[in-house]
Length: 352
Image (cartoon, rainbow, N blue to C red; front, top):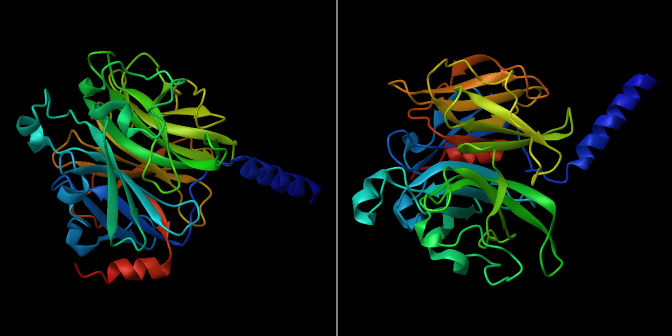
């Protein structure tokens, strides 16, 4: 009995120590993703976290053309609740491959910014677009001379990819107020660096302003599509990430705080089910009542592509049992959020 009590107290201490967390609520599930039919954002809902049903037939939940003001495409959608659980937040990669010639991009896979979106009801969304080519003027601390900008020439930025959100109540702004949204993403300026690296900014509580990017880590090779979760079992932040080049798979690094320092990726325990096939867009979540984790990702080198969900233990280790997601017409890079029965029904009854 005493041993069990001590274990419970230890777990509580670990949990309370995590002052960065995205609120979870409800026993239903929302899968928010880029549609593989086009570069728009779609919804699917589930009662068990594994079997889903498209909302509005897998059509776009908003006009990407209107809300992504650089290229008119919203890729890699990440969704979560606001820290006070009063709103919903989303971040997307502002990118559309068909805009390459019109924008004079060097590559179809170049892009220039991200979109921060908010909603009060999951149905109606508004956005703020950040075009990184404009440089320091778009950042809330762009005129702060004590900060060394990460680039000399922002107009040459050629990738700002796959942003995600993590609420951090410990972050302190210049005016003394606390709490901000840690936005992390990969970025590349090919005139000033050799490959994609992970950066972070902080967004304010209005989710309309962001700080200058700061380097999160550099392992000496390109890294994209990071997904960070706090794991109570070991009291660490776990980041699953795609390493460009080298051994195919999805790897894990850990840290005691969001800003790091982050460990090198674990090389002997990773998602390797696809062999030499390519996978990315990892998203970890927990199913209600389960101690372990589910790890979702897109295997994109096959035709048709496969969107997988596999298992991991409570330490987010020992990956196993991959299976295709069920019921989604065109799954692609996305994220998962727990929702309530009321929210589930609202989405199910949505008539666009």
